[in-house]
Length: 323
Image 1 (cartoon, rainbow, N blue to C red):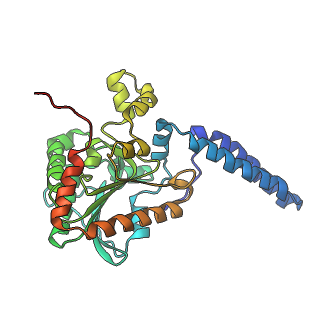
Image 2: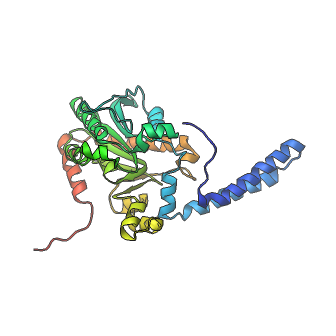
Image 3: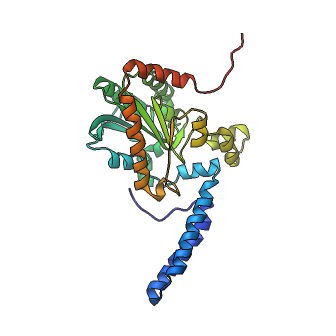
């Protein structure tokens, strides 16, 4: 994972001031060879207490800002840390190769699995190459090709979701992106192999759902999963994108809301400060969750997998039927 200048969110500014004060004390201590351990320790305690207070009372909109943090670990960071012998496969055999959606076989703790993942870029050049993590139709068709390959060789599917949504350009519409996503929804619902999706950051609309019809949906603590972005919702309801924070609260799109609504099956805890604060710890949390859920799913029969997957998605939401 690349490192760069620390990016500070607006609600973290009190921490920035304390961190600068801490660095200044350490520098003075080193330059003047003066023992300032007590003062340094006191500020370190204040930083931890302030951080705990901030992250204990985050709003939905603030969690979205964490989910979009540019230094947050992306899919390839997890793949490189968790899997062995990942072999990326390219192309949809119809149009081209979409770099916003990657995938291929790998080994997870000596078990063969199929990886299907959305990948963002860190630099502007890479983001243009990967379309800012927004797949085109050929990306979803490539995902479908890999799903069928996984089913043929009886390999569990691990899908990694991190996208603001499917690419909304004219070219994507011309190549039938709605159809590509719809076919994936249908085909994933009948796959005869275990499947898990992990929402790493953004889980936007059909772009996320296009690889998310699985047996278990897991979500990181500060990630979100929604039918529309808060900005898009605000633009529709209030004709004002500045009301995105209000829309975020109304959409109930954060991890704890999604778990209570049974839209996701489990919430994976993040380190204090978010995944970017301690990527190694966050990756280990994902490893433990992935191991536990995959072990359970591998013990189930094909019939049970299909039945439970169908029931899972049919039971989402509250509705009434009237004669």
